[in-house]
Length: 84
Image (cartoon, rainbow, N blue to C red; front, top):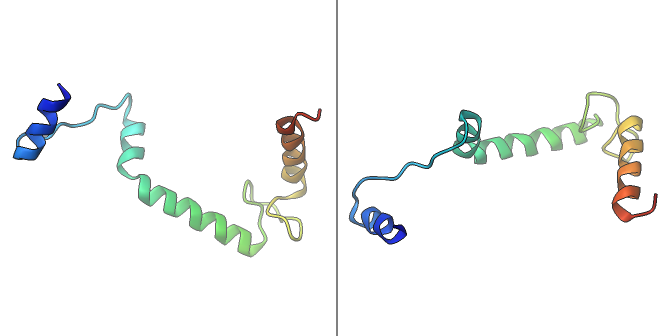
């Protein structure tokens, strides 16, 4: 089956369209490159302005999170490292 599809593509025949579970996944995969670029730009813009990257609060100096999200990150890291 795979060989038939590959051969059909090489010949320039019919193109097989990927099937997605829902329209959101179809949109994501179709626009993945643009979406990732937008997210990266948003992250760096927020970081540069001193805004928390997870919400719109003022970030702690030298850190990308506000005090609330910094505390959540500390707790997350403790759990992830096994030191509860």
